[in-house]
Amino acid sequence: MSKLLDVTVETKYPYRYSCGEIGSYFFKRLRDEKRIFGRKCPKCGKVYIPPRPVCGPCWSPTSEWVEVGPAGTLEAFTVVYFTFLDPMTGKTRPVPYGYGLVKLDGCDSRLQHFLSESDPKKLKVGLRLVPEFEEERKGRLSDIKWFKPAG
Ligand SMILES: [Zn+2]
Image 1 (cartoon, helix red, strand yellow):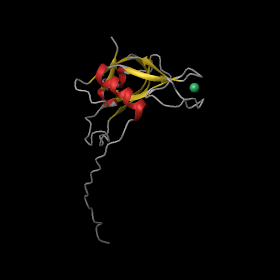
Image 2 (cartoon, helix red, strand yellow):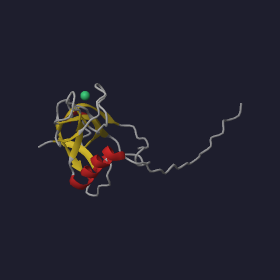
Image 3 (tube, helix red, strand yellow):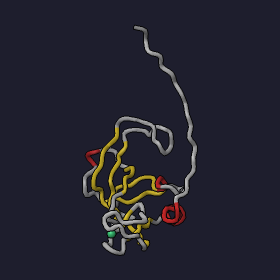
Image 4 (cartoon, helix red, strand yellow):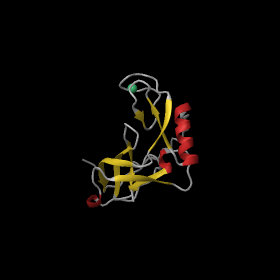
């Protein structure tokens, strides 16, 4: 049997999409003011980050903006040791790096984000975190560079 042929193909799919009214509000406040706002359900009172137009459990339209965080609590984490292409940048991210689920103060949902700490011995569930913002922000979730231990 002959060796299988290996073909390299490069494709690019540049695209833009509208964030909608709710996403635009959220990302503009993040970019321009380094403040994080969630949407609150008028029926059950849950606050969502990223903001949602409708509450999942109640099916009620969310109607109120509330500022959350910026501090939060680490609820789960991993340390990534294998490099792969970051779908947001198309580049590999240096390893190791921490990645976690962060529950911001005043919010009922969790945000998945990078952590400044990559030593698993220094990470633990319940760790208090604060966001570190990029100097040049573009209206994206990556305007938060990562979450770092508070204090
Ligand atoms: Zn609700």
